[in-house]
Image 1 (cartoon, rainbow, N blue to C red):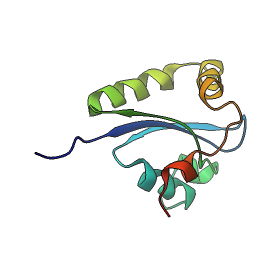
Image 2 (image 1 turned 90 degrees about the horizontal axis):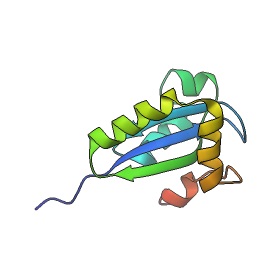
Image 3 (image 1 turned 135 degrees about the vertical axis):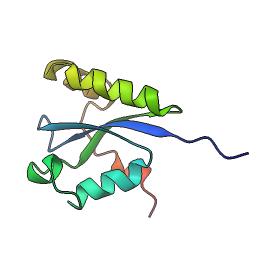
Image 4 (image 1 turned 120 degrees about the vertical axis):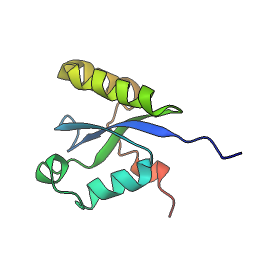
Length: 100
């Protein structure tokens, strides 16, 4: 029997109170690393959005995608409140999930 897959809904910020990016991935460490190292062209590279400020783990990709789509429709104040309720200092959570 294979181990359970995990899928992540995540929010990146350019800085405290800065530009936000919302995404979904099945490998949070790899994906945030790609954003941090600017390996993919696009929004996060252009606006230097690479601070992992919030994430959720889900066992079902459809649940993670629905969560992403729902939050993308939220106004900014709601997104900021979600971040600050869980990470009041907007700390970069990447170092806590990445293995050396």
